[in-house]
Length: 110
Image 1 (cartoon, rainbow, N blue to C red):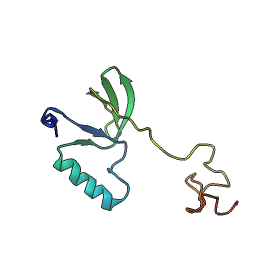
Image 2: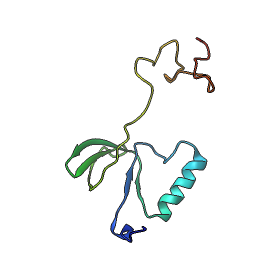
Image 3: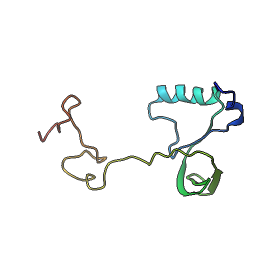
């Protein structure tokens, strides 16, 4: 925007989630920012392939592939607990390890 080129740029944000953020208060604020800044948000799309200058996403609702050309691509992989922790006695039902926020030590096995 400072260099006067924003009007020549199209920004797309793809997420595998159905919301921008898991906390509704922040999701609403982020959605307002995306709308006011003319950002194209695409929910429930997973990145399945990257080729030079082209990203392919899978629409999780329709199972259709979406081809998106790009000049710049920033990717953050899906995050979750490690498979080795799911079902482990040191993790909860979802596979996350509960720790003390001040010490980062396990709350039960310390």
